[in-house]
Image 1 (tube, rainbow, N blue to C red):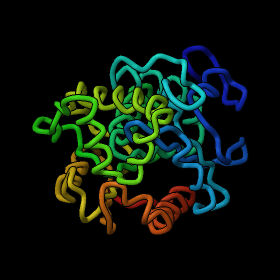
Image 2 (image 1 turned 60 degrees about the horizontal axis):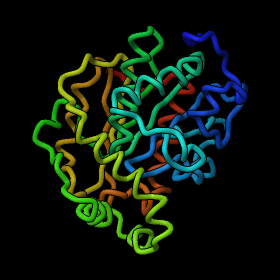
Image 3 (image 1 turned 135 degrees about the horizontal axis):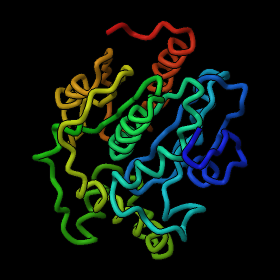
Length: 265
C-alpha cells in the first residue's frame, strides 16, 4: 500500500493525476509504465498498445506542466519528480510492473525503480533507452545556452518538431515544458547508485549523437541481476522510426516476464 493507504484503482486521485492508462485494469497482471523524454507528454506512447501483447497493461507517466496537467507546477528537480511518481506507482507493484524510459525518462524511471526497491517492492524489470547510466553523467553537457539554443538542440535530435516552434501558439504551449525538462536533466548529478535487484534491458541506436552504444552498456553495473542490450538503426529518436521492431522486442521481454523466464544473471 502507498503511504496514504490508497489502493490501485483508475479513480484513485493520485494515480489518476500521475498515470495515463491506455489499456489497463485489474485483469492485466503484467503492466508496462512508460516515461516520456524531455518536453514530451504521456501521449507519445498512445500507439504502443497496438504493438504489444494484448494481455499487457500499458500506461504512461503524466509529468506536470503539460497536456491536461498544464497548470500544475514543474517539479523542482529530477529526484523530487521521482519521489512523486514512486508514491503514485507503489500500489502497482502488487502486479508484475515493468518500467520503460527514453532519454530523460530513463533516468526518471531508474530513480523511481530505486525508490520502489527501497520500499521493498521493486519493479519486475527496468527498460532504459538512449540515456547514459547515472555513473557516466559527469562529463555530459549541462549548459545549453539560451532558449533558442535549447530549441536548436531539440530540433537537431527530432527535426519533425521544428514546425512546432515555428508556430507562435504551439511554441508558447510547448516551450515551457522543454525548458523545464532541460534544466531538470542539467541539475541531475547522477553518480553511483545502489544496484537494482531486477534485470535491466537496454536499448540504443547506432547513429545517436548524444551517446554511443558502449556508453549504454554501463547500465549493466546498475543491477545485481541480468542485463540485456540491443542496438537498433536510427538516430536519437529511433523508437519512432523503429517502433515496430522495438515493440516486438519489448513484447518478447514482457512475455518472458509473464511466464517467469526472464534472462538469468
